Length: 423
Image (cartoon, rainbow, N blue to C red; front, side, top):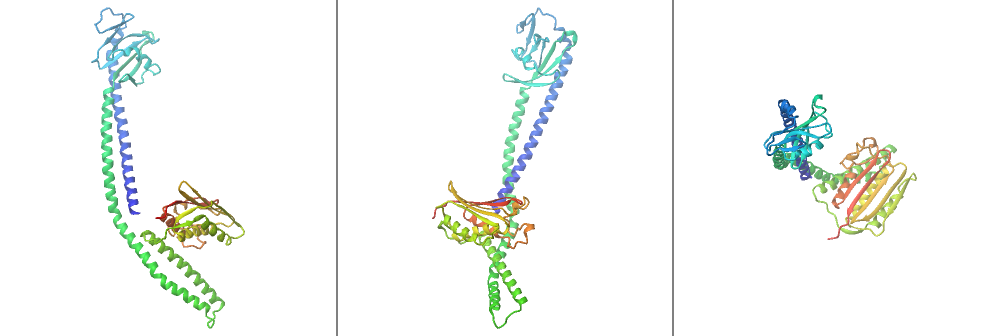
């Protein structure tokens, strides 16, 4: 149990650390990207302001060109791979006028890339193997609706951010593993005093339950002697007191037996006998016998597949079924209780369902807790250990028990038991 809690704490600590660092990393990445993009946009705006005069002058036809210039309808595209910023001027019909480019052939696609982008909005686009930051500017009316696209490469920035992110991810993985080992160690240290206290408490419960059985048996036997003593007849009131004492003694005996069973289960000292059980026949016999104890307002429905066999402890399985049936009858005033037994995919499924008062969503997670009883139903006599014992029996047989319920609609207990082979 403590190892499970320690493992759970380790996973939770590591998960929250990882979540926090990932959120921090995402915030850092977005912040750095935004700052760098804003800086590049400011550079492009400064470039546009400084070069605007030359850009407007270049609207005139050119006759002298460098060897790297491309001539398109009498206009020129100057190509320089070392240029930091580039620009293109287009007519309102998206026809190229002129420009200076840093990437050979970009003039063919740049107008299409920025076709649906509003003027003044920065846009990061992919072109071939490059990431480009582009801005469209509308030129004055005197330029007949011409517009200009300026831009620069942000490929190096993106690659730098990617490398930084990869480095952070590696550090996060290493940090998470370190946190997981540290959390596991600290959780183990924190569990030591709790474990010692729990062990002392469990030993006390086991010893006290064992020691109380003998005097309780003597006390009960003495009550029976007094009840059967013809020489010392009690009054009617005395007889009622005697009967009440016997009932309380029986209740206390059941409580001690339950505590002893759970103490042995906690210490892995349950002594059970594995045998081949004709489970279909066993469940059918128990439910038929139980049906005779039900009032006329409750109907028992039975659906049991034939020839289902199970390797386990018959006494424990009997007790499990009695606990579930008695629990269903206790909280069902009218309606039905159904018992179904099926076998499929190497598992046996036992379902006990009723149409009783049900369990609230607040109480549902605690129904298997020891001594837990629903507040509204404390008038129903019980030890508060029945479902805890049922869970222990199922767990001891390597099975699983779950509960489904809705307040006012009834409750369903579902038990899955693996079909084991006898050793």
